[in-house]
Length: 124
View 1 (cartoon, rainbow, N blue to C red):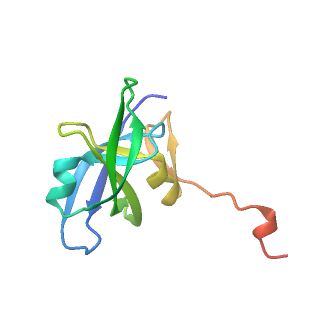
View 2 (spheres, rainbow, N blue to C red):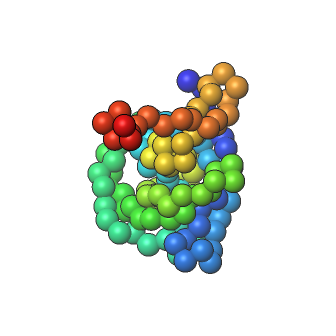
């Protein structure tokens, strides 16, 4: 799949500070990620650490926190990884799934996606 960028707004949980970026849509990345300095600047606080693998194969420990992500007018609370300073903002699979968005690789855009619910959970 080719890559493309998409507008993303990340807001701290108080709703007071936010940043708008062009994020690389990366369904191979679990977390949405922004440079740590950007997340700290808008007041996003780390809540735990995870061991993550970068696209080049390197392993590193990253802080992860919660923020509000807005994509195409829809907002959701999501977990965000504190990336290396100077790294590209990534829009990851967790946030895309939470927003019920899928990737149209041909048109290079995000599209609404009907989520699957197991039949055992649906009303009879």
